[in-house]
Amino acid sequence: MALSFPRAVWFCAALGFCALLTVPSCFPGLGGDARVTLAVFTLATVAWTALPVDDTYVALGAGLALTASGVISSETLFATLGDETVWLLICAFVLAAAITRTGLAGRAAAFLVDGARTVRQLAHLTTAALVVTSFAVPATSGRAALALPVFLALAKVLADRTRLVVMLALLFPTVVLLSAVATLIGAGAHLITVGVLWEQTGERLGFVEWLLLGLPLAVVSSHLAAEAVLLTATERTDRRGPVVITPEQLQEHSPTPVTGPLSTAEARCALLLATVVALWCSEPLHRVPPAMVALIGAVVAATPALGTVRLKDGLRTVPWPLLLFMATTMAMGVALADSGAARWLVAWLPADLPPWAFLTAVVLVSTAAHLVLQSRSARSSVLVPLVVAASAAAGVNPVAAALASTAAAGFCHTLPASAKPVALFADLPDGVPTYTPRDLLRLSAVLAPLTAAVVLLFALTVWPLLGVPVLLETQP
Image 1: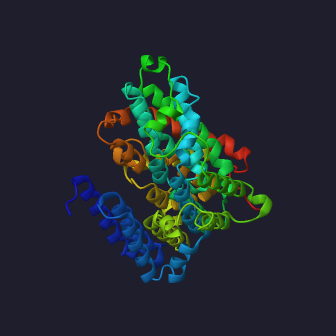
Image 2: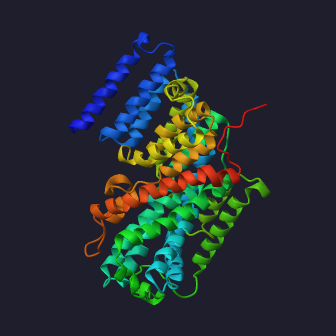
Image 3: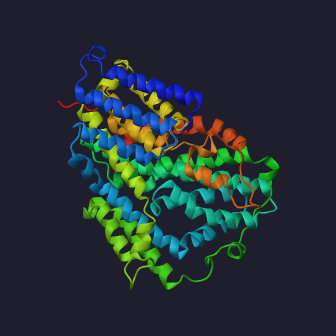
């Protein structure tokens, strides 16, 4: 397994650091469990960054090493798989499979784009539709796969306007990634963040709390991103021409019906989805946990008489490697906190750093982290435990810091390999125009500072109005 020179240097530096950890005099005051945890954490981060090894395999190896060394118990490792957020994601994927089977996404897209009369209207209506999908389909890769047939149908209708097709090819993955912050099930990284906050601070962010904080940010950042895509991917002459896309035109290139009355299966699935989302959003009223609501919805969706998907088919769509990755990285977060390793790492930070400067640093590092760690979940696994530990030392609310880091990590558009949705839309069927690496770099030059500024603005001004203050509240 050959490594490039920079990666080889990075790997050797990590091995050297781990070797120093075995010498007590090098790091006085650092306990044995903390040394083992830091060594495992360092090697896992390097493996995620520099080695062509599956992320889940690395996480499982790290979890086993921490358990075998006695840093965490086997009960702690296995209990993470039973966390209610894991069950929420499993059931949400079964619901998403039922929705995909019916073709409701195509109907919704046809309904929205039918109202577009200009290029800008088409971009923003498409953006609004993609934001809504964060309620129905968990994980960004699942939403990108669901949106791909819709994009291909639009590309066929707009085949004579190549630049508009390229613009849409950029818009779809961009909005899918940035709008994921709208809901708790939008990305696996969100569940890791929630788990770390619960283990380290005792704060539990539920579906409604995340929705209240994340949805406004998702809407604002997604529509600003739409403007950035329009600015960088089209010329003024491209945006001047009118746009006329009818449901009948989309139907010619769509494998599922997008016009006409809803079928019985479509009507049942739409009603089920609306009921589940309504129950998720009204949790403070009925007190039924979101995971239980999702489980009920998944059972109904797979019921032979009422459902639209067989249970075993729905379970096949669940990304089990992602769930194992999430569970083991949650256990790594527990080890970092309980062993004192996280406190030791952040003890090197300046103690007098102003809260706004601390949050700025968190947002900037999280925005750039995709250049090193391509997995969004891996980024949160590495950054969030450290951010939560450092926030207490800086006098910053750990919830605000963790949310800012997770939201900023949603930017991963610089390279085709930076995120699965970007890679998916960069490799389209023959004959369908798409973006080039140069197009991505041009967009990233505008979008990276824009999204970082928006996240920082929300963390400092909007979230405090919604109940998440910047400063850490001290007990009297």
